[in-house]
Amino acid sequence: MGGDFLPAAEEKGSLRRCAVTREEGIPAQMVRFVISPSSIVVPDLDARLPGRGIWLSARRDVIEQASKRGVFARSARMQVKVPEDLLSQVEVGLHRRMIEVVGLARRAGQAISGFVKVREWVMQRRAAVIVHASDGSREELDRLISGGRDIPVVDALSSEELAKVFGRERVVNVALAAGGLATRLCCENRRFAGVAVGDPRVCRTFPADGCEQAGQ
Image 1: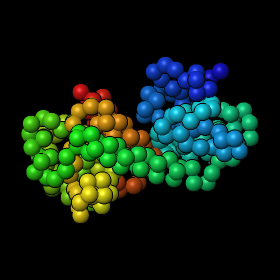
Image 2: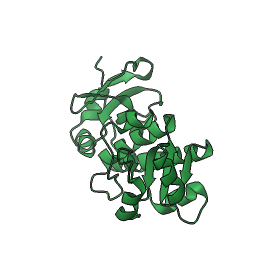
Image 3: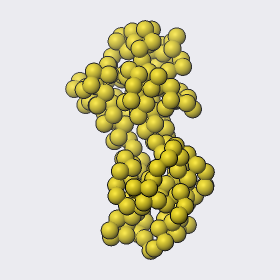
Image 4: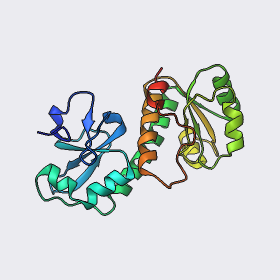
């Protein structure tokens, strides 16, 4: 059975094959889909739902092709129902997951907010990832990361969304310490950026190896 469509218990190994492009990729940077008991295609962003998995590259055009060209049905070898808002489900879900990761980091003591505190972490090389609000200014971001421009910057969450996470009226700048949560945020951001083409809330200074870099 092909690597793009495997039972959950058999989805082992370090790579998955995209059912559209046939290219192999790291699971954390792809999107898994499953077929529900009612034959509906469902995004499995956490890659934990039971059933056979259909893996796609985290790209808007790839998901659109899979939806329009019968890729899900061919991979599942059965008739399936593809929701009209499937791409929106993926985009909204990934956006929500980034907010959740920042919240987890805050509760774990691995995230701080505020320009002065974040700037201190940058200078002390304690910041593994910077989250700069999508409605923040480029000039402020440039001042913030001066001297630390190799730090991944996630630019997909609004100041209002960050404020809710930290229980404040407005939050523009956040830093995460190195570790699993920083790595996870980078991977979620990369997936979001891939499906949110044309969305202004896409990170501006995110390096290609950001997932690996943030965990160091």
